[in-house]
Image 1 (cartoon, one colour):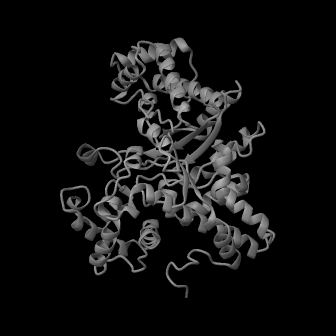
Image 2 (image 1 turned 180 degrees about the horizontal axis):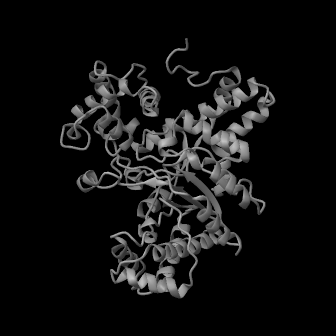
Image 3 (image 1 turned 90 degrees about the vertical axis):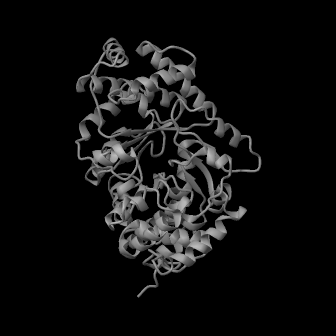
Length: 466
């Protein structure tokens, strides 16, 4: 019987052990998709206690606590921080088999040297020990990032953002981690949402011009693209709950855009025409700028109306969508490819039924001398567990080149989430090790070690040109 989460955790063969300890564990981190706040990084904030760094805003943990019958007061409500931590500590022993169980103990081990299991009995001692460490300068945000061996990270930023904290971080000679923006224009694409008009008005204010037509709008977007590019942005991100594709003329889209600004109701076809047109414009500009385009597909958001009205979005009430994506996505990609406008693209799916759909489709659009131009993104959200990561990598290996994969992202709002990269690397090394043990892959540790290092860090650096 193996010891729980020892140094060879998840490494079930000799090849995996060697690959992880000699290659993967030594590689730095490029976290090209996360939701960290650049203001918090620049101000180098510290946390008062473990609840603040662990439970504020972490809907992964909130969902588990709700499943364990914890009252909402101890999750998002007005209970004190220790009471919230204690309820989480009571929940964790019930979470075996869930990745949060592993992440929780990895974070306790890696950052605080705590090897005890978190539960109701150990909670008071762990609370005191962690909090005493968090109060030291060693655990300021910048030091946590450096301690995690992060070299580059990309935040997620609205096009109207001033990027003032990215500017300040760039000028900070005492912090050698690159913090780059990523362009997230969802509010400007979701023309069917209630906040669209207000967002367009804000965009116009930021650009110093009134936006009255679709041409005005595209000019404003282009201005913000160039602004982000001047701050080192190398990628965009789009949340596509479903993939829209409807062909149209620019005149049609202009009429649709003006109707939306007047607050008139749009048909679904009008919405789809607008979304398609904007994505085509943006894709072309990304190609010209040398950016990559991330598409996060198939989330079903805000499914619980009562709790959405009470707590708002991103509070643990999203799920997996089951829409058909193959045809509209292929048409969208082809419409860009046919005009020489297809940028580098990373495709993520929240529904594992579409793993082979994405992995196979992207193979039709590789080329231009760019290794892995089209990427099958890492197992995302509900899939970033042992099975989900393994299946994503096996699918990619079966129909493409796993060796050119750009690897893991945290997709997290927590500064303590970087052991997720270690988790991923252990799973990667174990998968390759299993292939070696079965005689399916040659026992060439030099070749395999380089592939592991490339997937861990080097491929992303080369792909984004950072």
